[in-house]
Amino acid sequence: MTTNGDATVKVVPVRHYGRWVGVALVGLLLAMVVHTLFFKVASAKMVCHVVSGARLCHHAMVYRYQWNIVGQYFFTSEILHGLLRTVFLTVVAMVLGIVLGVTIAVMRMSPNRVLSSIAWTYTWFFRGTPVLVQLLFWSFIGAVYPHLTLGIPFLHVTFVHFNVNTSLTIMEACAIGLGLNEGAYMSEIARAGLISVDEGQIEAATSLGMTRRQTLRLVTIPQAMRVIIPPTGNEVISMLKTTSLVSVVGVIDLLGAATNIYSENYEIIPLLIVASLWYLLVTTVLSIGQFYLERRFARGALRTPPPTPIQRLRADLAGVGSKFRTRRGLEVSP
Image (cartoon, rainbow, N blue to C red; front, side, top):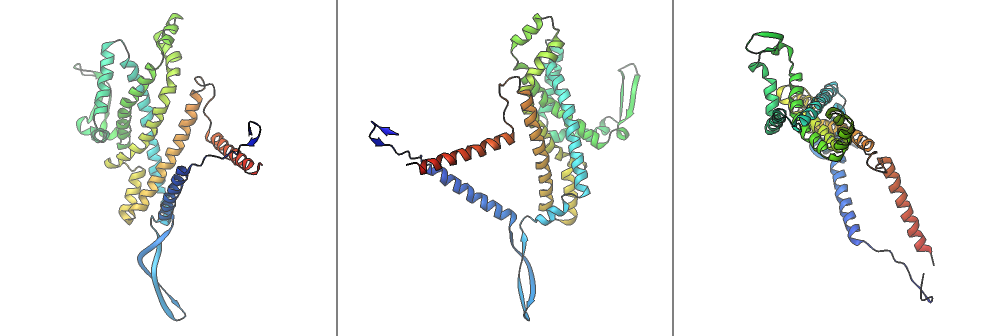
């Protein structure tokens, strides 16, 4: 490149010194985290050896977070059974919560004042009381209702009757409590998605002769899914961790299994790490599923769907390679 045809302009890349300082600080912090997590430190235990007739003693080197014990209990049957109970509670509670949430959201938007008032009361009550209190209530529901009947009040006409104390297990009670609580939050998420659909879409469906049910099923809900899915995925992940509260009422979930083990061997930190790693693993799987589900429902709204993690990695590597080749070309050019 020349200026007025008689001088060569030297291109000098901009130096970002602040970025390099930030990278150095972050690298130092990461090195400290890796060192404290995975390198051994001296313990209070003394180990002695006889070397050339002399007895030498030194402090035993151990992992700070006792990763050997973590690996020992990571795949034990107690932990895996607790994990299955946690996943089961999460699935049942979310299915119940989603069904209730969509139903309550539709009732809330109904022009019928009775239905909308009942929906508002349900949401108000279950969002306004702690989930732990609700779990305790449902766990001891047999003390209030030892027998449940379905029939006509005041006429002593009964269609269905069962004993709560013998028919409802503590696991089922916890699933019901978590599902009812989740239904209140899902109703607001579903309502937000439904009201995000433009009214013109509903008017167009009505003009075509669709009923309210057909409009809701064929027009409103498919368009609302793009708004509903992200917070719903967040609720699923939150529910996975909320299930740890059931250990308070005696259900041996993942955290409950870890608690039972460390109450016997007193290895508290390693067992808590085991539970945390399993929670992180399942959360990661759920997050990946949420990403691809969001990507699928974004097809009708975006011209180009968001790239997958593998596509992003390839693009980043290609960008780094292109930047390196460009800088190398600037350095060797006369």
